Length: 207
Image 1 (cartoon, rainbow, N blue to C red):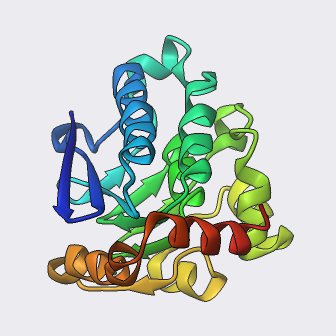
Image 2: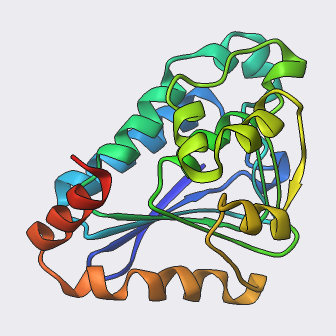
Protein backbone atom coordinates (compact mmCIF):
# COMPACT_ATOMS: atom_id res chain seq x y z
CA UNK A 1 0.00 0.00 0.00
CA UNK A 2 3.10 2.19 -0.23
CA UNK A 3 4.59 2.48 -3.70
CA UNK A 4 8.21 3.56 -4.03
CA UNK A 5 9.80 4.59 -7.30
CA UNK A 6 12.57 6.82 -8.59
CA UNK A 7 10.75 9.26 -10.86
CA UNK A 8 14.04 10.68 -12.14
CA UNK A 9 17.68 10.23 -11.12
CA UNK A 10 18.02 11.33 -7.51
CA UNK A 11 14.28 11.87 -6.94
CA UNK A 12 12.35 9.27 -4.93
CA UNK A 13 8.54 9.34 -4.93
CA UNK A 14 6.48 7.64 -2.22
CA UNK A 15 2.81 7.06 -2.98
CA UNK A 16 0.12 6.29 -0.41
CA UNK A 17 -1.80 3.69 -2.39
CA UNK A 18 -5.04 2.87 -0.62
CA UNK A 19 -7.47 5.06 -2.53
CA UNK A 20 -10.52 2.93 -1.73
CA UNK A 21 -10.01 3.89 1.95
CA UNK A 22 -9.05 7.54 1.33
CA UNK A 23 -5.42 6.50 1.91
CA UNK A 24 -6.15 6.06 5.61
CA UNK A 25 -2.99 4.80 7.26
CA UNK A 26 -2.54 1.54 9.12
CA UNK A 27 0.31 0.69 11.46
CA UNK A 28 1.94 -1.36 8.68
CA UNK A 29 1.69 1.57 6.27
CA UNK A 30 3.27 3.93 8.81
CA UNK A 31 6.12 1.49 9.36
CA UNK A 32 6.60 1.04 5.61
CA UNK A 33 6.60 4.79 5.05
CA UNK A 34 9.18 5.37 7.76
CA UNK A 35 11.39 2.62 6.36
CA UNK A 36 11.06 4.06 2.85
CA UNK A 37 11.91 7.57 4.01
CA UNK A 38 14.97 6.34 5.90
CA UNK A 39 15.94 4.24 2.88
CA UNK A 40 15.78 7.30 0.64
CA UNK A 41 18.20 9.05 2.96
CA UNK A 42 20.60 6.12 2.90
CA UNK A 43 20.39 5.84 -0.89
CA UNK A 44 21.64 9.39 -1.40
CA UNK A 45 18.40 10.78 -2.83
CA UNK A 46 18.58 14.52 -3.38
CA UNK A 47 14.80 14.97 -3.32
CA UNK A 48 11.77 13.11 -1.98
CA UNK A 49 8.15 13.55 -3.10
CA UNK A 50 5.22 12.35 -1.00
CA UNK A 51 1.84 11.96 -2.68
CA UNK A 52 -1.29 9.82 -2.68
CA UNK A 53 -3.29 7.77 -5.14
CA UNK A 54 -6.82 8.86 -5.97
CA UNK A 55 -8.49 12.10 -4.89
CA UNK A 56 -7.53 12.21 -1.20
CA UNK A 57 -3.98 12.55 0.09
CA UNK A 58 -4.84 10.87 3.39
CA UNK A 59 -7.73 10.81 5.84
CA UNK A 60 -5.28 10.14 8.67
CA UNK A 61 -5.45 6.98 10.74
CA UNK A 62 -7.49 4.01 9.57
CA UNK A 63 -10.63 3.97 11.73
CA UNK A 64 -10.22 0.44 13.08
CA UNK A 65 -6.51 0.97 13.69
CA UNK A 66 -7.23 4.27 15.44
CA UNK A 67 -9.65 2.56 17.81
CA UNK A 68 -6.95 -0.02 18.52
CA UNK A 69 -4.49 2.70 19.58
CA UNK A 70 -2.89 3.93 16.37
CA UNK A 71 -4.27 7.46 16.85
CA UNK A 72 -1.88 8.04 19.74
CA UNK A 73 1.00 5.87 18.53
CA UNK A 74 4.54 7.31 18.51
CA UNK A 75 4.85 5.87 14.99
CA UNK A 76 3.46 9.14 13.59
CA UNK A 77 6.18 11.17 15.27
CA UNK A 78 8.85 8.72 14.08
CA UNK A 79 7.66 9.20 10.50
CA UNK A 80 7.57 13.00 10.61
CA UNK A 81 10.93 13.01 12.41
CA UNK A 82 12.44 10.81 9.71
CA UNK A 83 11.19 13.21 7.02
CA UNK A 84 12.48 16.26 8.87
CA UNK A 85 15.89 14.61 9.33
CA UNK A 86 16.42 13.85 5.64
CA UNK A 87 19.41 15.68 4.11
CA UNK A 88 17.47 16.38 0.90
CA UNK A 89 14.63 18.50 -0.47
CA UNK A 90 11.20 17.15 0.53
CA UNK A 91 7.96 17.98 -1.28
CA UNK A 92 4.42 17.03 -0.26
CA UNK A 93 2.36 16.81 -3.46
CA UNK A 94 -1.11 16.88 -1.95
CA UNK A 95 -3.48 15.31 -4.46
CA UNK A 96 -6.48 16.01 -2.21
CA UNK A 97 -7.59 16.44 1.36
CA UNK A 98 -5.09 16.21 4.21
CA UNK A 99 -6.58 15.26 7.57
CA UNK A 100 -5.69 14.15 11.07
CA UNK A 101 -2.43 12.38 11.71
CA UNK A 102 -1.39 12.67 8.08
CA UNK A 103 -0.71 16.37 8.76
CA UNK A 104 2.59 15.46 10.40
CA UNK A 105 4.31 14.13 7.31
CA UNK A 106 3.26 17.15 5.24
CA UNK A 107 4.30 19.65 7.93
CA UNK A 108 7.72 17.99 8.10
CA UNK A 109 8.33 18.58 4.38
CA UNK A 110 10.15 21.59 2.99
CA UNK A 111 7.45 22.39 0.42
CA UNK A 112 3.74 21.65 0.08
CA UNK A 113 1.77 21.97 -3.14
CA UNK A 114 -1.90 21.05 -3.46
CA UNK A 115 -4.76 20.68 -5.91
CA UNK A 116 -7.61 23.24 -5.80
CA UNK A 117 -10.06 20.84 -4.17
CA UNK A 118 -7.84 19.95 -1.23
CA UNK A 119 -9.13 20.55 2.29
CA UNK A 120 -7.09 20.68 5.50
CA UNK A 121 -8.25 19.78 8.99
CA UNK A 122 -6.77 18.26 12.15
CA UNK A 123 -9.69 17.44 14.52
CA UNK A 124 -7.75 16.60 17.66
CA UNK A 125 -9.84 18.82 19.90
CA UNK A 126 -13.11 17.19 18.89
CA UNK A 127 -11.68 13.67 19.03
CA UNK A 128 -9.97 14.12 22.38
CA UNK A 129 -6.42 13.42 21.19
CA UNK A 130 -3.27 15.49 21.44
CA UNK A 131 -1.56 16.34 18.16
CA UNK A 132 1.73 14.69 17.40
CA UNK A 133 4.43 16.34 19.57
CA UNK A 134 6.25 18.18 16.78
CA UNK A 135 3.20 19.24 14.78
CA UNK A 136 2.08 22.35 16.71
CA UNK A 137 5.51 24.00 16.49
CA UNK A 138 5.84 23.19 12.80
CA UNK A 139 2.34 24.48 12.17
CA UNK A 140 2.99 27.70 14.11
CA UNK A 141 6.21 28.23 12.13
CA UNK A 142 4.17 28.14 8.91
CA UNK A 143 0.94 29.94 9.80
CA UNK A 144 1.45 31.65 13.17
CA UNK A 145 -0.08 30.85 16.57
CA UNK A 146 -3.59 32.21 15.97
CA UNK A 147 -4.12 30.28 12.75
CA UNK A 148 -2.58 27.18 14.32
CA UNK A 149 -5.17 27.53 17.08
CA UNK A 150 -7.92 27.83 14.48
CA UNK A 151 -6.87 24.45 13.05
CA UNK A 152 -5.94 22.57 16.22
CA UNK A 153 -8.32 24.09 18.76
CA UNK A 154 -11.26 25.54 16.83
CA UNK A 155 -11.41 22.62 14.38
CA UNK A 156 -11.40 24.88 11.33
CA UNK A 157 -11.54 23.21 7.92
CA UNK A 158 -9.31 25.15 5.57
CA UNK A 159 -9.72 25.11 1.79
CA UNK A 160 -6.81 25.36 -0.63
CA UNK A 161 -7.12 29.10 -1.23
CA UNK A 162 -7.14 29.84 2.49
CA UNK A 163 -4.29 27.39 3.08
CA UNK A 164 -2.23 29.25 0.48
CA UNK A 165 -3.04 32.61 2.07
CA UNK A 166 -2.12 31.22 5.51
CA UNK A 167 1.23 29.84 4.26
CA UNK A 168 0.20 26.27 5.01
CA UNK A 169 0.81 25.36 1.36
CA UNK A 170 3.14 27.03 -1.12
CA UNK A 171 1.34 26.62 -4.43
CA UNK A 172 -1.99 25.46 -5.89
CA UNK A 173 -1.73 23.49 -9.14
CA UNK A 174 -4.27 21.67 -11.33
CA UNK A 175 -4.59 17.93 -10.58
CA UNK A 176 -3.21 16.97 -13.98
CA UNK A 177 -0.10 19.07 -13.36
CA UNK A 178 0.55 18.09 -9.74
CA UNK A 179 3.31 15.55 -10.23
CA UNK A 180 5.02 17.47 -13.03
CA UNK A 181 5.02 20.52 -10.75
CA UNK A 182 6.48 18.52 -7.88
CA UNK A 183 9.12 17.06 -10.15
CA UNK A 184 10.02 20.52 -11.48
CA UNK A 185 10.59 21.76 -7.93
CA UNK A 186 13.12 18.96 -7.50
CA UNK A 187 15.09 19.62 -10.71
CA UNK A 188 17.88 21.76 -9.27
CA UNK A 189 18.36 19.57 -6.20
CA UNK A 190 18.46 16.42 -8.35
CA UNK A 191 21.21 17.94 -10.48
CA UNK A 192 23.35 18.93 -7.48
CA UNK A 193 25.59 16.83 -5.28
CA UNK A 194 24.11 15.27 -2.18
CA UNK A 195 26.47 17.25 0.02
CA UNK A 196 25.45 20.55 -1.53
CA UNK A 197 21.75 19.79 -1.10
CA UNK A 198 22.30 18.75 2.52
CA UNK A 199 24.31 21.90 3.29
CA UNK A 200 21.64 24.28 1.97
CA UNK A 201 18.85 22.38 3.70
CA UNK A 202 20.76 22.55 6.99
CA UNK A 203 21.18 26.31 6.59
CA UNK A 204 17.46 26.76 5.97
CA UNK A 205 16.51 24.57 8.90
CA UNK A 206 19.07 26.15 11.18
CA UNK A 207 20.68 22.77 11.84
